[in-house]
Amino acid sequence: MDKTVSGPDGQPRCGWCAASADFFAYHDSEWGFPVADDRHLFEKLCLESFQSGLSWRTILAKRENFREAFDNFEFERVARFRQHDVDRLLGNAGIVRHRGKIEAVINNARRARELADQEGSLATWLWRFEPDPATAPEPQSVSVSAESKALSRELKARGWKFVGPTTAYAFMQAMGLINDHVADCVTRAAAERARARFRRP
Image (tube, rainbow, N blue to C red):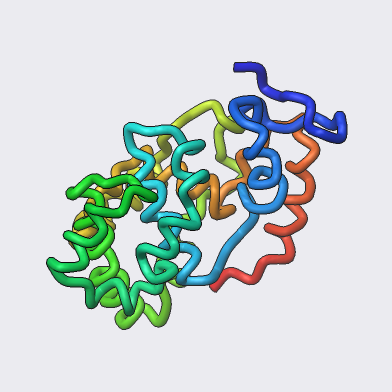
């Protein structure tokens, strides 16, 4: 894959945007920008889990359906889902109907509730895994890191499901724990400015 591709304005963007015109808005306004909101962080962990074995294009196209199906990923609500909710979700053609992943979201909502109770917020705990930018590899040169392995290991130890190190790394890229926009990408500087202004929880 080329490192950059021309966006709608002719400016270079990360090469993965070439896979779909829908990616440009997501890339420019969300991917790599830091997030401290627990609901948003939980949503992204869930959607990255659903992406496993699929393309992000598939998940992004269904994101609003996922939000509706899972009560906007409010983990306090999702934690109360029961078997009839699993059955309902398995019948929802607007989402990825994978029993293991659906059950994982419900399980992970319960684990997220526990973690937020223990740590004050999900964000407080997750941002402890932010890598040191000084030792970060070249952008988009790896799909796992020591930090994503550590995050995956700790989540699994706390009972989370479908949170392997590759999923954890994709989550860290998307939520701005790292700025993985390539050097020539026009959005890299904006993401870096956002990270500089961001108050770590």
